[in-house]
Amino acid sequence: MNPVIIANWKMQLGIAESATLTGQLLDHCRNKKPAVTVVLSPSFTALSTIGGLLTGPEIKLGAQDVFWQDRGAHTGEVSPLMLQELGVEYAIIGHSERRALGETDTDVARKTLAALAHGIRPIICLGETAEERSRGQQEDVIRRQLEKTFRSAPPPTRNQVVYIAYEPIWAISPHDAADPEEADRMRLFIRRTLIDFFPADLVESSFMVIYGGSVDAENVTDYVGPGKYRGALVGKTSLDAQKFCQLIQNVGRKFTGD
Ligand code: PGA
Image (cartoon, rainbow, N blue to C red; front, top):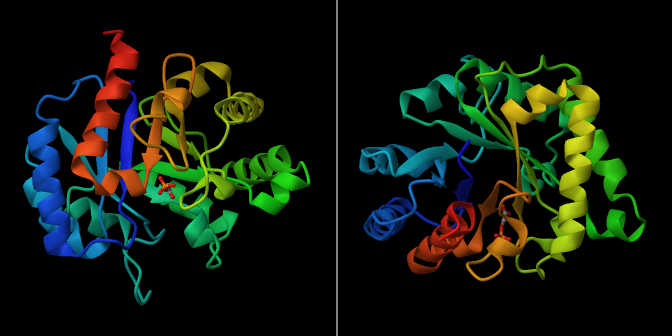
């Protein structure tokens, strides 16, 4: 599986701004390393426009959330069927900014199931708060989040991919980036925990552990590379075409060795 770089534009850009940035990224990314999968996650309102611009294989379309029902009386929600209609292939689920508004591990589990059932690759966000970290509880938090997410969900099949994004909440910008060694210890912990839940070969074939939190073009390869995280979820830096493409190039080089 290719390493993956996912842009999370959060609620930062309207439709026209998203289209402008996508145009710039397409220009920059024509020369990107083909070995890196790039995903853009604009706001729901911009998905249709951005999907229309992403006609080639260079860049994929992602959503910032997905609901678990196909249709029904669910005011304000967006279903996996609706996302499918727009060509969405990836969905961020359980971002800490959504969990802070009340999203639970049970919601994350339902959304993960629904995404997989509709061929949308879930990007499940996990991470501890600064307070939990200061109490030394980061592993407990991550284990609980993983356990609750996968307790009710059947394991992915071998041709499905689940992305696990470790995003320590205290390292998401505007906070400072995490120490890469500390971040890597959590990667190993997540892997070990997944192997507690699923057969090791399934973890190998169907899970990709990626990193997020103040990742930029300069520091990305401290976290991402062979034997490290397999990709990154990028907020702030993804809003600048030149810096984001430099980040992608740097990751590509790390994996291809040139
Ligand atoms: P950041 O955001 O790169 O701006 O820290 C990452 C995220 O919240 O997904």
